[in-house]
Amino acid sequence: MKLARFAAGLAAGLAMTVSAALAEQTTLRITLQLPMKSHLGQNLLVFKEKVEAVSNGEVAVEIYDSAQLYKDKEVPQAVGSGAIEMGVVSLTRYVGDVPAVDLFYMPFLLNSEELVRKAVAPGSPVRGPLDEAILDTGSRVLWWQAYGGSVLLSNGGPIKTPADLAGKKVRVFGKTLGEWVKAAGGAPTLISGSEQYIAYQRGTVDIGMTGVSGVKSRRLWEVMDTITLTNNADVEFVVVVNEDFWKGLSDQHRAWIGEAALAAEKDVRDKMSAIEAEAIKMSADNGMTIYTPTAEEIEVWKASAQPVYDQFAADAGELGQKVLDAARALQN
Image (cartoon, rainbow, N blue to C red; front, side, top):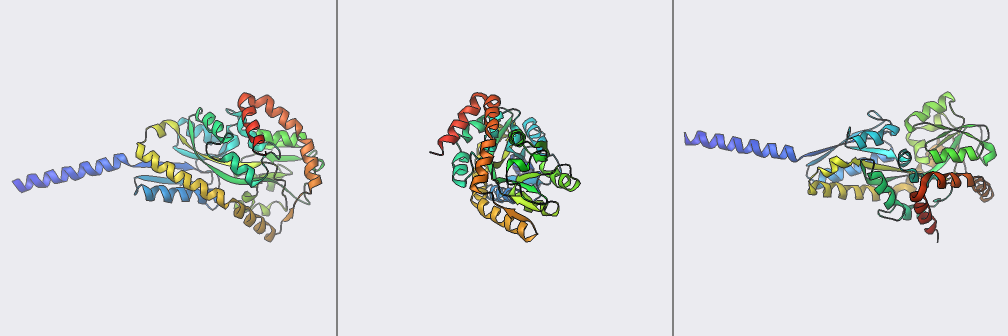
């Protein structure tokens, strides 16, 4: 009788222990528009491995790549509403709520790795106010993912000056990039990253625009034959988590997730130069012509871009001016 009661008590205790463990486990579902083989996908794996290791499995990560759950433009709403815990999204997708995020697409403003690193450092006078503003949308920025400099894609020859864009339909992925194209005489067309291959293949647009690493991950050499290394903008993605979900986590789980996020951010930033170099080499190996604009051509591009700065000042308000001044101060 005593043995039976002991066994029953032991079983109940084990059940409570298992139940408590299950209750304490946190599962993070992350939506990603790019393929898992992309460097952003690989960076999510760095985060997954780190957080699952430090938490001894208490925090689990599920990654849904290739826009199988949400397209890039849908991620801010999906995460902000709590439909999914986390997502990877192009920074410019927040431009409707926070126009100042398009600072990174101001033509030739942050056009060196040194300037970009200063601007995107956690808590910097450029990044800090933007992270705070995004928090008002219901999402907290956990880390930024480097995607590299913007390039132009074309068929039949490079895009050397604004004159080569005149009258052409150009794929863009942000409002400010669209203003840059319009200032050059082109017709901007907003197309999600996951849809650009088919847009080039069908001739929906004449000119492409993307981070150079995207040429490799999406095999864009199959539909375009030339890359022009304009480096006119810095392309950044952010990994966001629903704020209400975040607040509901234990302090320990938040600490583990934060630790893994910092490790993932450093990993992708430190690898970016090599990633871009590899993407350019692979593009060339697959038959693409790689064109680097001359200093004189860049000056022509810069001269044509003043309307973009005027529009940014009008749209982005006080916050926009604040981060623009901070970005310019980095150059001193």
